[in-house]
Image (cartoon, rainbow, N blue to C red; front, side):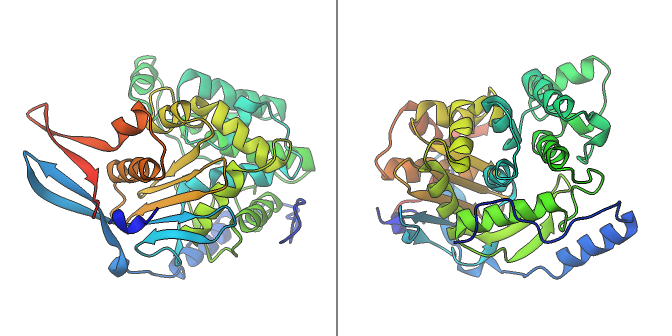
Length: 358
């Protein structure tokens, strides 16, 4: 496929330092902000038009971005835009984060392993799963370092508010990942209070796993919306990571993560989310979205795909990924549905957002 048509390290648990006690909060905040302040700035001047917004037949606007496909050997097969500079993959890093925890001895059944890689909707099954992970480790909601939030899912949020509950750490969409980080700490005898610190053993193990699976060194460390370290790699490295995860042997840690995500897609996102629908409809597909217009996918033959929309629009990331899958020869009603995003006028559909093809 020509995407111009659309505008070895150790695999064991690795640590570099062991924190023996709480790190002062002021120090942590200062250090984390300094990492953000010094992060490389990359202007999106070389991004390409990858989607257009059509209203009543009129092209109203464009979304710029970058797309890359990697071959089974990890090389670049096709690209549009800028794919070799560091980006912040946001929640698209979560499968690799789950891999790092498995390599350190975390043991969870498939649905909870999928939840460890999730940006969940806050539906009852998600919250019950987070409680299960915490309880297994002898912990509770007060140990979570996630900021208080409401459930992402509209129906779940309305029911949550109806029962008189306000924002809580467990309802935050990353609470499954954080619960799994804490459980990994308990399994290894590491301190739990400082588990979000970039130099904590669990975070160093996650970094090693991401570097291994992506074939790149982490370029920068930021702070994600949930408070955990956010590791920067290139769009190519992200695609390569997903291709390797999707094609990993079944009983390896990478294969276990891929199987959990693919077979329990509703735990990775939600029962009404586009990612879950796409994986349910497409055998062997592994995919995970991230904030600011990031979307990555892996195919069982080892090919990887990564999308970054420059303006962060989720509506554009979905149509560009669906169009890329279609042009790679995958087709089903869900892919066809996701190739366009509706544009409304007066409550009725009057147009679409669709990938730009040349």
